[in-house]
Image (spheres, rainbow, N blue to C red):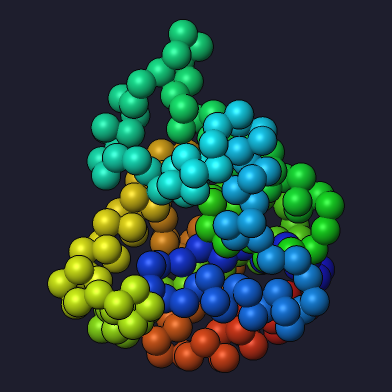
Length: 195
């Protein structure tokens, strides 16, 4: 069966977002990344700025701190409301049209569908560090810290809402090392596997 939805999870600095955008162009399908923030904000009633920061990244670095985040009388935290709004938006997009969705636990949210190709993009530390330094105009030490912090927060969010290990190969259809394969080959593999 052809895969009409492609989810791309990625390590920070691996080029996953860029690869996903190119795959969407090559397949002529919609691409969703930061452009779904306003929809999530609408559904949750929270500001787009808050969603930008919180929809994919845990506000806390530790799972215990995340679990103990402030909760209302129903037992829900603001993060839970964001996740639920994000989940609804992703389900609606998948029902509406073929697309590429970057991050946001989309692989898990869409796990019960047969038409989804789940991809995890990772890379070698040295190459990711170089890429982050170049993109953000920062020194190596800051790039390494930024990478560790972002990936830790992604991992915490993913673990908390999915009860699965972020980046574990068995959670994805494909795991690709963009440093070893290069972006072009990663794109070609994803396009080929979606057919």
